[in-house]
Length: 151
Length: 323
Image 1 (cartoon, rainbow over the protein chains, first blue to last red):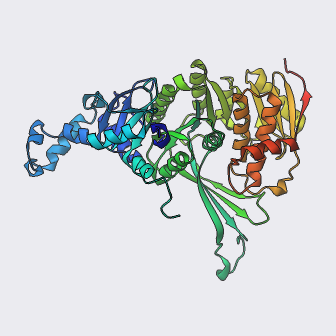
Image 2: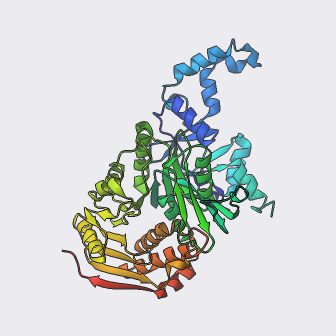
């Protein structure tokens, strides 16, 4: 089956100059863990997740540590987030985006999601424009036969 | 690709009741129980999107949504095959309530909220997103009321952006937002005359007055204007002529009028996109709208049934071109 047939047809995305605080608002309200970044023609140019924002607000050495108890206090984290809140998200986004095209097989989407451990993948058309996303749950629902379990 | 814009969408909540207890009721009687209810995404552009998807036309619904009810709108649209592209705002998407009493479904009780306010930052965010869609869009639908805080010239701005990008525009709105947008010469217009029974300064109290108002709008540059005359009849005016539409259905047969007008316009748009002759488009639109009004379901999705129903509709040319 083609990706087009199982994807969630939603075009929620941000531009690269959107400030971090606005992205946080959209992630929270749209209930999405991450967001594609598009240019003025809707072409996919990046990807940014909650995790990227948390990483941006933490000290550089944090990933070398084994426990969050090394964070001096939450105020420090809040201060850092406040500092970066007006920065454009392009500072923190990934430019090497994992994606699938609408013509790809469901197998390719499943393979990427499993191997790369991502929650969802943007889907683009032949011109590279965002047309939807494949979520892990889309795959699970599709693989379980799209049947209504309560029917 | 078609883009529909509903800046002030809604959750449509419909209650069917056997008997509506209002006025002087006793303590024991004050509760009205609904025998059935339905919750769907609503708003003019949203309803048109649902119909167009049912007819197999890919389309994207855009606008503002917020809160729990915003998720209800987005989810319902996705379930119906519509691509969603909404800007999230603070506050809740409004809920519009319809109460249909058994035997009196043709005179429903409608309670519409005005919607959460939308600020200028959100509006500019939306307009940027709208522009982004234009390179892949052939038709834009602008529909319904504006949320509080959105200026009256917004449809004019959006129609101008669409035309500059080479897309056609369908507009269905009322009041000042409509009057201003008409200066952008939309290709297909259905004025919402539920609250304002005047157009271009003309009171719509007779068939001739409706034709005059329609001609005045077409003279300004609009492609075709459709104005409700009586509930089962409409008048269409374009540069090429004037048509009167009639149906066999008595209004007493109506079961659920919510969205029927939007399906009517979406039906005309569907046939226009398929390059059907104007009379066929009008007949199909009215058939689709009437079948939606005649059924409990908001949007009639049965293409064969609509095609059959067109046989019962007369479209009569009652006037020549307006040049």
